[in-house]
Image 1 (cartoon, helix red, strand yellow):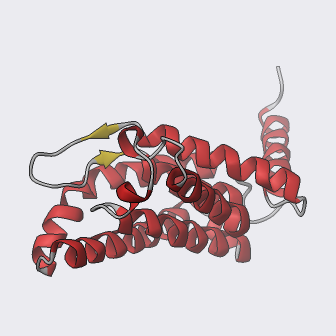
Image 2: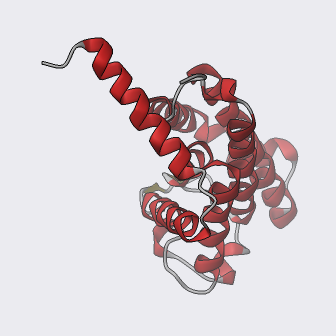
Length: 201
């Protein structure tokens, strides 16, 4: 049986190995990671629940966004979301419900899709620049900030597209998703804590 201290040391080494691998300078390796997380986001997008009072469905997409930022960092986390959007625009059926194309992007959820790129970059760059941001509570705080960006762009897009008031845009595009997204943040922060190293070797 492996002593607990030896096991902990081994797990730490594995986490550092993953962290250094995911922040690679190799664009071949980075592109592979970005494609993998774009595909993960597309897969999670197929988990959807339509609500009768809003054109915005509940989906698993944002979990993929949060994980891309935390686990891949700014460069490849952002690239994964850019690939997700671009490939969806040209016909890969991995937006929510298996949709794709410009018509879907220009629909009521277009603002959220744009927010994915900014949120993954924001989460990733903070995690890359400061080891302290890998602490569980700070990871969760980062993800809350990322979700706030997604909400802001999503609600703003709804306001412009539907010509509705701010309060209506919030009730349609933000309020119904708060509890579910809080659970996604908890799950993503737990995964990040499991896979990322602490603040020191």
